[in-house]
Length: 179
Image (tube, rainbow, N blue to C red; front, side):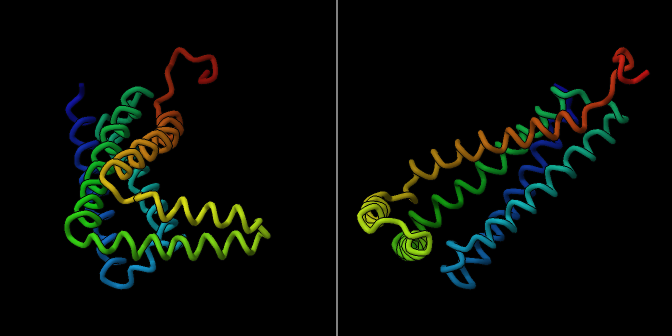
């Protein structure tokens, strides 16, 4: 494996992980109710998109403008695994070691927001009760659930990585489309 690909994947993954932790800490120290805010999620996604584009731009530049689809996706995959692992480990520590009570607080906010949304859309009360029961009985902040969530996050992130790898790959001279 090309050393530039490996180094950039690791470097950008660590940067992204640290930014992710900073966002989590910022929310935690400001107001835990923001953990259920869609705005924080959107901000995190936008930052991730920006970092991943910068990853591809820098990697392609360091490879003298020659980046294959495989190299691009490999760099992105290394970056994503590192970033998700860092943030997941921090979340496991935060919710299960540093402040286990935070689980219940955030779960309660999620239940309230879910109930509001279901009522706004006219959801049946029996479905609402079942959903609330499921949320209360399901510890979504346990290490196992956080790891499973990170695997789903990785899978969804890879779709974005495939798109970026296709966009940033170098054009080959043998392609009839380049003539």
